Length: 66
Image (spheres, rainbow, N blue to C red):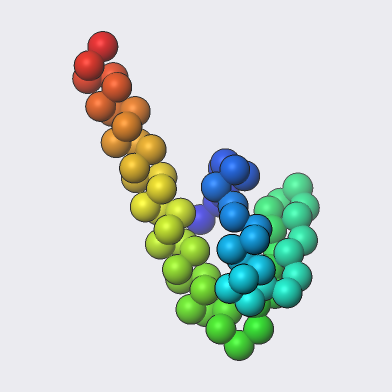
């Protein structure tokens, strides 16, 4: 999944969850998470999908009103 909106990234929350390296490049982010990386990656993807879905619903609702 690609991150389209950088404002959706909560860097403090990532650090609190155990990310000890966060590198940003033109291609995206590299996170070092240690032993819990798979669990955190799944949760990040889930949250990103939920936020994207909620944004799409808002856009659709606004379009229906106008």
